[in-house]
Image (cartoon, rainbow, N blue to C red):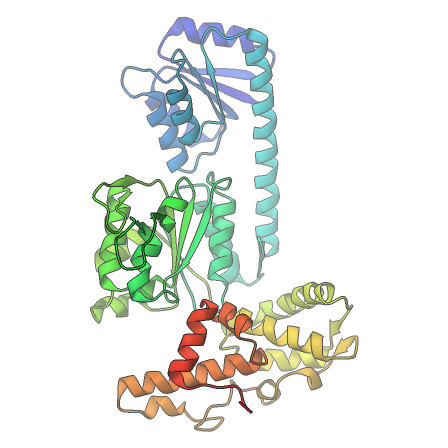
Length: 460
């Protein structure tokens, strides 16, 4: 039988609610916030009926504590306060419903029954999700290796809380997918998930993107604009590639985390924001701290919980599973039924996948599109895979890239960018939109970069 917890400091109010709900579920009582915390820690409650006005700690503080600590039990506020403001504040804090004292008994029983059904469905969903994690699936991410199961299990535990999460891993490992799934399994799932690619935004625009601006804040600011933090209010903001953020913006992000307020560019008033922060980077932030490029205090604020996604080369046991899943998806997308031959799978296993899961998917999509056969053989794979090596460089297949021998950093960076963008453009047949999407850039930003580097399509 399901269990309801009635929280009210007045014994008479608890007695009345108990009598009204007898027969629907087992009923327990509490008269203080301390008792609620003790019962919540045991995980024995399916629904909480919570009064707002209590002597030691008000009900809304208790509700916020429940949500911040990962307790997603539905809460029905039962209060004498009959104001729109108190109802809105309760719902924004995570209450499932609000009813004022003096209610009709049948109306109360109906609402409680509905919330108990929701609680039962949520519990069943959690059970099914745990089964999927055990089987090697976390949302759209797949992996049965011990390393990936550890990541999934930690993500499953942290998702219902409001804890700040830092996701580490090489480019292409699926950091964005993990962030999205953590949000989807959190109490904030019904609110916005706002992603920001910190590496793709020019330094002079990132503060405006994050915090917004007032009209006239700078040349071209013709009207007021909300930033990503405001747009994510009540939900989650995902700061992708935060290791590339400049120090000035890092300081403002730290202040936003600590004070839960932001200030628009050109503004003079703080704006309260309630957001959960998930960040990600492919960089070693401790090395960045030692080099003076990343703030140590921000690092510790971001790394309340750290999840490290292993590179594909470190979990090749997962590769056949990923291949089968991708080929099925891509075949359906392109209207074809295809499979990968054992010989091709063997060839894929010999490659080290510097681009990780993203590169694997791109290779398989090319093979599905270009092959005329229902069975993908090694012939459909790129040349570097057939050699069992990484992509060729100007210095030869086995040597280091040419730009690593360049003594001048700026020139090395320029040569790297030329090599990087040429390779990506060739992979996408010089389709700028697709290349920009994969590189995490705006189309116009990529076009500007190509002009700056003097890269043109062959024949033009």
